[in-house]
Picture: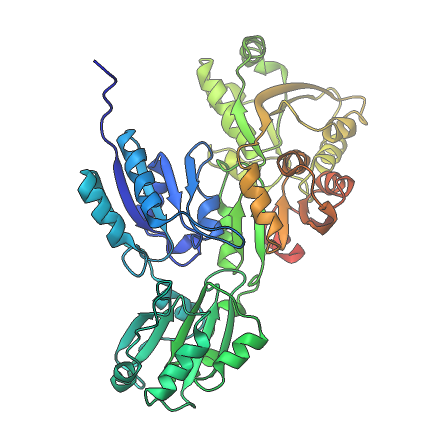
Length: 502
């Protein structure tokens, strides 16, 4: 008998208008669980960057200079991948059943006998106006809204019922209508709409490149041409457009307009990304390194031996939150627990590392004012007394600056214990290059010199003088300068300090 695979399943998933924070909870879960992601051009960069490396990703949307896959080919891809037994996520911008051709895909899946689910998404028709301060309905202005496609099939003329739409006196939303903007405005005028009716075009809503033009039916097309408005854009027509300036809120956030890449390992604390988004930035997570447990048998035996001799040390030094996490895992794996550390004092390189210790009921005794290895080394060399022995639990790629500062005090001794490895991550090189080449990234956040090296390895040949590096610590900044980047350095590894740099 031949190989019989269990049939897979397809989820037609709405990715929302662009911001990853506007994904539904179910969509986010499916992106974690899916084996194969088939995605459109309109799926936001933030959403794409949150998909774990290792998943099969198939882009089927058209972009500048490239034609997208025909709908029939997309249908074949979905059926093929499902028949291979995969969980297939068909990721579509906005909502899959609102001008997203999700109905055609559902028909094809039905004919092929493939199970599927539909996961609605937040449509740009409602969310993009909201992010631009335009309520599509308002009790004092209008109580109905009508959503129309401005796109028409090749070889066919527009069939928009302008006169009927004008008679509704409701808010009109046109999607995919940038190329037909002038025709749409003229159509509304010919249908009986006053040319002074407020109208707006909203480009790349919910992202860092969001732009808004509010004009009138008679002037919007000319204004959009002058500002070179491009797709994707949402067109809104109606009295509610006049509220945009008063209600606008997104562009008032302190980091609006910033599109930042965070290069730290994805599995690490995500508060940095969350806080930057709260402040208005669009944040792409593209890890350039990954932290992994020690695998080498010889080094594991060294760790095992050291865990039996913790009594020899007076100060336990941590240089990362993951170092704390991994050390305590190894402690338990070797049959010991926190009681083995009761005689020790604790040093942490910064606030995040100190917080990881607090989760385990331990207050750090030494935390430098500046969160870097040099400052931590100076603090320890200046504060500790004769004969103090330190155990440094950190990465196998730990920098030399900390050691050099400790060695300035000849009365101290230390032992390095590598509790995890740091590896370069290359899986997302193509995605990183696509983000960097379109010119929309305004800054790259580096949290260590390793992230800088990993970034350059992933990107390869690139005009690094165009990269604006926001660095934590002077060592990280020096690595970015050597790569040819423009740099700013944060005083500390905090969101506030990074935001000040941005």
